[in-house]
Length: 476
Image (cartoon, rainbow, N blue to C red; front, side, top):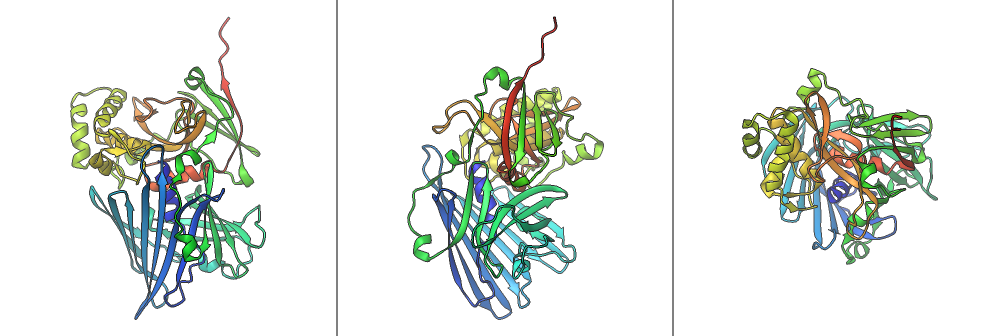
């Protein structure tokens, strides 16, 4: 989950300072964390055409986890616009290891068609474009903007195949010499992404700062030599963690834990309430109570359950590869909870290789036989839907007691599966062989990139205040 959480987040961010109106410029950028360690670089080139222009943005990250060899992840986005500056075609090609994926977005007057090509095949999504939909993440609106009044607009997000609501507002904390703003992305009323931008006096972006759990990553302009300077692979896993306020023992993890959080810079959001997670909010923060039956559960009305059974671009439960794996378990006609458990056993026989690169759908993950917690969660969710069981994918944080890549007693990003079984929503964690009270859900989705990256960004907003085991007093 960790590499894709970073890579997918950066891939959706506009590069600072790209002068797309100039004839064929080229800009270079360095991507580094808040301690100055370099992750990679980016470059932007614009070519003039007879009827418009074409902009090419390329990002390259060099990452490593544990003892595994370093991996170079690249993302190239080509945007073609007409003579008025309106996009006509956006093509993104992503490479992680040996895998190549292509995302093509064709934009018409009132709609966009997004075609995703991967190992498992081709998936097409058509999106209606409401009047006024933007394609530049608000960059033109910030030119000459003073920050006195917030900006709000709709923007096409091709990577997630949707039109999202975006706001831009002055940040509570300002960096010297710039206007620092917060760009927020919403799904309905729910916060799904946040980025800090430093603007110069003209309103151009001079730095884009992406907060993540445990680290912040900044993309800023540089010269070519600086951008291409060799650097060691970035040890992402060690940085995208946070020490737990207390050591959590096995007994406490299997019981009831109460967490108290404030919000950094007052940027509040509401975590989901699940069967295991109760959320209580007040003026100063939120309290999460987590145990096997602490929460009210996700919606279970007929419409919600029907939506949790449908095939999606990430949960292709009707794909032959998914159906073939699920069919032997379905034939046994077990209880729904037992079915989910047996599906997890079946999935482990295929998902036998750990791979932190990329972001794979259920069908793609089964084709490769590799992944991490996110692939495990997506595969199990798709298998559940193949069996007619409503499922979702939860993303957030989990506690690790064991020493992991040199670090122990930490919380780290994680994903797992939720299934509506035997009349209630219940968590199934195929990666960790079970749910406990250290699973903190921050988003619920369908294994899509948007909900995964949102969890990491939202985690960066939490101000940890307390963590305590809740014990029930024994009867006299």
